[in-house]
Length: 378
Image (cartoon, rainbow, N blue to C red):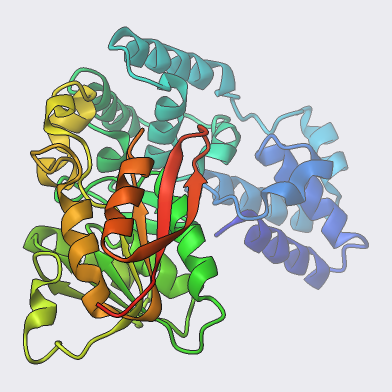
């Protein structure tokens, strides 16, 4: 039951007993119990209530009805200003502060942000509304879970996304674990650019090479509902996650198949397949740079999703060489690229009969997406 639900319940309950201003009385009661300013109450309409909060509200409603008095009068007679609720905010803020310091000791980037996500996860609330739950006691079992997650994040340097088990990408929830690469915000730029390419097509067909968690394929499938999207990956474990995410997001227009790049499309069953767009965020970290990555990446994320064990261009070359065979006339090929790779990738694409139509920078002003158009039949 969320705040709006309990407000409606309270108003109807008081209205049934002929209170003259049931909505106002309900607002006063609920605002007091939740330690929220009454004027700001509706900002937190979807805040979920704890069981003890619901019980306190209902007990005061019954007392107001039995004594036929308003909330202000009830509090005045009882000599209370906060319904005898202890405000745990100072104590909980201190716990959060010490948690941030713990993560900082292990040099975790964005320690405050990660600690807030951990607290929000355990307390079953959103990070932006975390402080609203700090007026109640954090139970021992919750403290234990918070501690375990902090140790995993700090001492063990396990990625936050794997600890939470789910991460948002392009506004959609995605399950993530050590079977797949964690979706990055930079990749949202690739999705955005691809969406613009196909959104006005009647029934666009899209192929995502190295789909991993399915983040690109599913996001495009959701954003362009008339599209047919195929995600390919060589890893069966990654495809398991991708299919879970397809079900989670109800993306019925997305299909996943096991394939080493285009290999499955060479089989008789699929050899006639042609796509309006082929997109890929391939492993592009050069092997000599791989060992310089952060501990979270080295210890937990799948290596084959990060590096080609070569110079970083192996998959750009392979995909560019074959993509024309599976694209319609004037079809598009779109890549995410690593730092300082855009120009080289553009050259590779041109050598394979693609006209470069766009190079797009990320939020850090780094050239991150390269888009080419098939310029002639291959």
